[in-house]
Length: 483
Ligand code: 4AD
Ligand code: MG
Image (cartoon, rainbow, N blue to C red; front, top):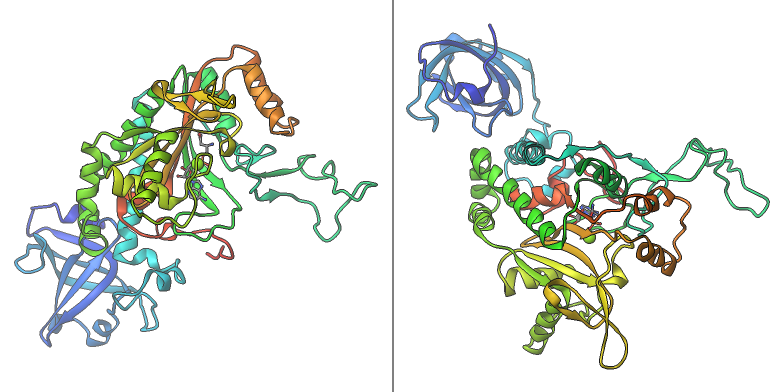
């Protein structure tokens, strides 16, 4: 008999029909006369209740139906009175497809997430991870749908690259060289002409630079792929391998970039509210009682647009009022997550798009704001809506979210050849691997902008989960690449 998915079965009303369901046993309870088996097949958070009259089945077989066992059930679909669902299955035939002895690590309820991470191969079968993974899938669909319906082309950028987009130098090297017998030149430096690509290559930290090549030809593109960062940050917000969505758009200015960031992220959250109701209700009940309210709040709220310089003023005012931060926050300092969260969660109580960051800690490719002179003769700049900053700033526009901190990092790109080159030189950057990028500013340069959304940070926000290791099937973090 053809199998029915539980997600479909629970919506049927043709009571009396013969059906076949297959899945994993969540619980079995009952009396001598009748057993109730809660069965889940991953198609939905909801279980279907299977009712098995003891007299109809071999007691030996019934004993094998334990939590985690995989079974196939044929029987009659009947209206349910007690199972919490409209439908249950009155079993006629049960087959145990896979037994599950009592050493099954996911057997007990209420295990900690730390414990479950040791069993990443089995944790997917729990309610929480099922819900998170279904939402993750739905967010991927939302993202592709958003860009497709807004006229963006899905553009695939390389994973192996010779350039370091963010310039942070935290890349994983890719080589086929024999590390036990490295060829070196006469100065003792490792050579790469004998390596697979004939030069030093790494896993990409971002598809942006190639994305810009796409946008300045196709008008609007987006990437959606894995990115890699060898930063040794053991935090609940960092992975060594994460997925990033990077739209890049020609003829977009700073205000329009912020409009895009806000519209896009609201669309994704709305998609979750519309399409993941059962899973969100489960997470709201079991993980985070404020979750659904928070998601609804985001969709209805206008994000704050705040120049960095104003943000620093607010933080310094908070310090004056007695608020304690661990890290300093003077003009020119990169904000720590405690600062971002203060602004978002305590001061504004809504998402903030921060813009016009100091040049000192942002990337070389960002559009430079117009320079002006401070009263003391030093160089200041004029940015968003004419706001003046005491030092050189760039049109970086990051989105800061409650619970998460930075969820999007974006910017308008410097389209002027001269300005871009002077910045590359000012930073003493090695231009060997950037010549093709620089060419875009030589031939038909155009204003353009884009951003990167950390996919797992979006999933953290939408699921209410606390640790980024729990929103990707198989996390990669320092000292951890099992599974
Ligand atoms: O701010 P980032 O470094 O920006 C870029 O890579 C730009 N090239 C993007 C662009 O403009 N096209 O990273 C973008 C986002 C961050 O805001 C964060 O959400 C996420 O990527 N991210 C990480 N997520 C998980 N683990 C990490 N180690 C991450 N590093 C960045
Ligand atoms: Mg960033």
